Image (tube, rainbow, N blue to C red; front, side):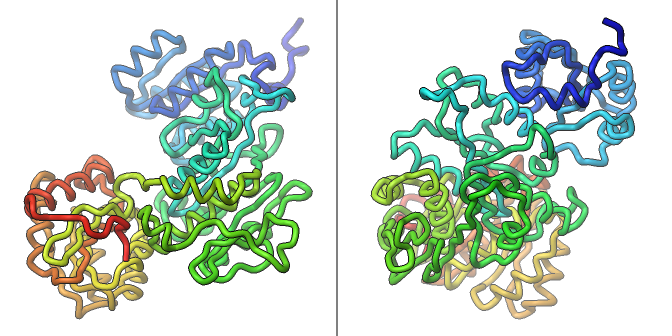
Length: 516
């Protein structure tokens, strides 16, 4: 066979929609050797591809593991080394890790050479049939979850409901477990609940590898990651991809018109329904709240005249799930679970034993009528605003890396709830300016602590000095953490440790629900 007889790489890629297709000899460049990049490289080597990994950093452990599985590694510390390697390799395909910006020189170079670019999600969808379950031999169904905030909580809730119904369900994707690792699990799953970041959605393409989820949801939309996407429209456009090709249920937020517009514009499969969720009385095909009862009016025969009870707000309070934005997540997860047939009583049982992950409106302590709450996961203004809305009188710990987003709107919206604000972060100027414009009467205290270990003890001391009985000291920074901490978990843990050390053994927890 001559070179003229060989199929074009694009034509060959269109045919690679199964683990059992012939992937052998495909030349693939993998960008990045983090958790996602390693899972991609491992998968491609197992498929028989020729794999070149280009990364600007890699841990010694992953380099050692790469030596075991195979694949060539080029460390690209100056962009030129990687570009030369890309040219010399003659790639048929590039698979990019989520954090790579679209304007990265290697991606620009690949695009100029008309080399297709995939993300790990597309690769995972194409090879999802590695482990088949059930008599029909069908791959696991996918439920896809995105949104500016609440993704991880909603994924966890959905998985808990599915497992309570006896289904083998896995949480994966942006939640920390690569989809490819789950797809290759030898035991297989019935349902994958896939958390998708805007970065991952950006790299999802049309065509043969197009993801077709059973159900999908964009929980909400607010400005975030504008420094990566370049504009609010580009960020929204990436989020909207979650609904494309949905088979059964497009779940959207009744309180967020942007999500409804996404559903209306989505190219879905025949028979897919729009299912709304919100905190008010539900309409037809909606999930909502009636007299303190969470209800389903979407998945029942006579939804015009009846509703199915899922649980109550009082029961959610016992489980620490009563903050309004968490209730919204519960409703969204219930809609996703009901779309695949989970009964209401099973949902109720699953919610009764569910616990939020750490650093999500997590109760730390109470002393002298002052509660201390860690919501370090509130890494953008939208999340912080939801957290602020759960309490009446607040000493707000705010600041960090704002990622190009202005917090002025939430300062104006929540100013009446603020006793004071304690401002952290290397660059505090944007936060101080937002308060000067929108809430000049709110007392501000700056933490100018050079060493990371000194920041939160200073925060705790300042907060204790201004908080009064009935107040909540709330760490909800509205910003990323990497200017002063390793991640949001490190930030939250240091806050909690400093609070407990300051308060000593007299702190108690009379309000396990965490939110008012």
